[in-house]
Image (cartoon, rainbow, N blue to C red; front, side):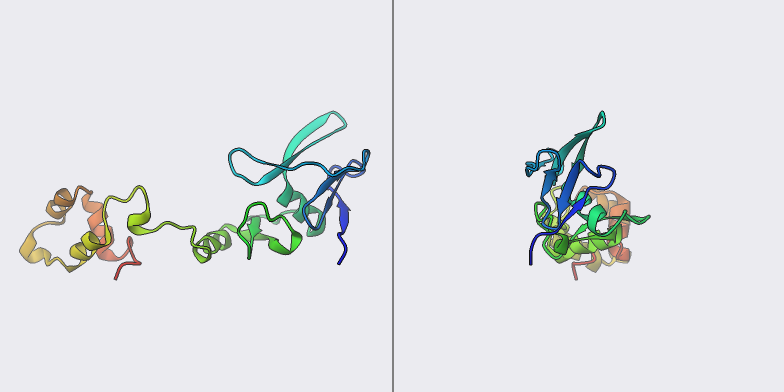
Amino acid sequence: MSEQWRDVPEWEGFYEVSDRGRVRSVRWGRIMRAAPASDTGYPVVKLSARGKRRKIFVHSLVLQAFVGPCPAGCETRHFPDPTRTNVNLSNLSWGTRAENVRDKFVHGYVVKGARNPNAKLNEAQVRRIRSTDFSKYGTTARLARKLGVSWMAVYDIRSGKKWRHVS
């Protein structure tokens, strides 16, 4: 199937975007170079016309041109391929924040448990917390001090709010 081109919304007559995520200048007829944004890694292009200049994410341009404006409560979703540079229309959609978070789990981008660099406990310690008979051991606060965490952390583990993935 051949590449389809559409005007970039708000930049009609100046720029076009393709369903493959390429942006071109109408005036010069050339494809623009999309550079990864330094803070996110998503490709951006610099658009300039009528005295205004903006850096815009390419995935946003593709969706706006081919699908329409972003619905309230939605954001760009890269799925099924999570690669930030894959800005093909077939890989993009407007989705909710919850859908994007679920996608992170599907692709293994969520770092849980001891793999999280901020974790103070490991799975063995969590199992110990869950198996401890506090009537014999003492208070939640005492075990928390021994493990170097807050009493609330121990409470959340025992109640199932935290470390749910550890049985």
